[in-house]
View: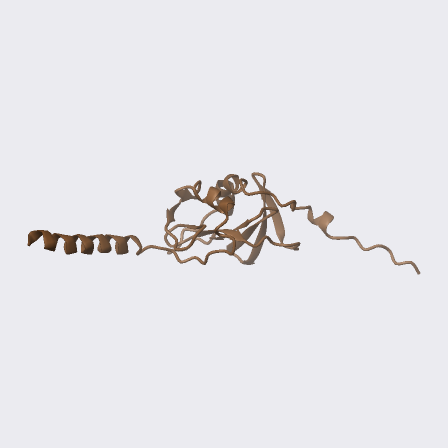
Length: 170
């Protein structure tokens, strides 16, 4: 009889521990190419902390998050951006297109890598949030992201990207 009670108690304890481990999970939508082997290669190398923020569990393939509250979200397998007028910076050999429309929260996406990686991070510092340095985030993750295959695209100087109008002949 004692043996029968042990089995249900063991199952209950295991289920409780499993649920407790999921309490801090960050919900992040998986990207369309999140199942690529290139993303898997990057994911196994991600650090436990980025810009002073500790890594947290996420609920989707090829995603990661750091900070509590979350200050950095990483998604591998997003669509590569096409030509854009957004600022593009190169960090450790990886080109990043920078969307500053929600500053002090930034969305940056690799340019010239397939599949692409998107980072969303918060640089704001307040009583509740200790924001991260965008430079620290990009310097920590760019060497790992550089493992993704290149697709031929690269950042160009804004002057080179903007065509100069030719004089109109009378």
